[in-house]
Image (cartoon, rainbow, N blue to C red; front, side, top):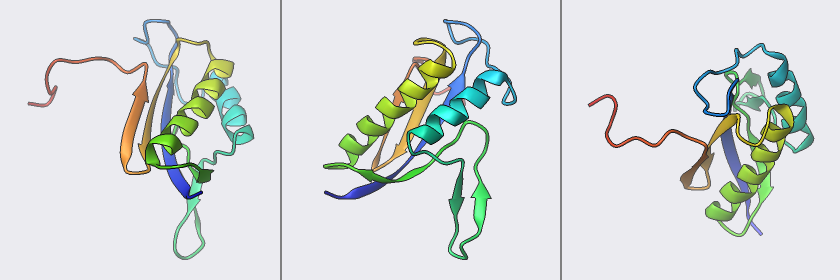
Length: 118
């Protein structure tokens, strides 16, 4: 079974409508970091010189995710991230964006009708 590198971005919110974000130093993020780490995620990556580089707040990486294909890798990564975020806030007060395995996946993201930058 192939192994994939997947990167999720997790944002924690103060309200169920996800209109107000917690600051990156909020206590809920401490819980999220612990829960993500328990699920195999790290808040850094190593470059070609074996130097550890810290990721921006709310970003994580998992580089040994065994999956059938990229879609399966994103699905497994999403399951882990949603469980960790739920432990840190609730089932509704977070959003997740995942890249890796040749695609993108998201949950609890705002739906829009047009490009906001157009």
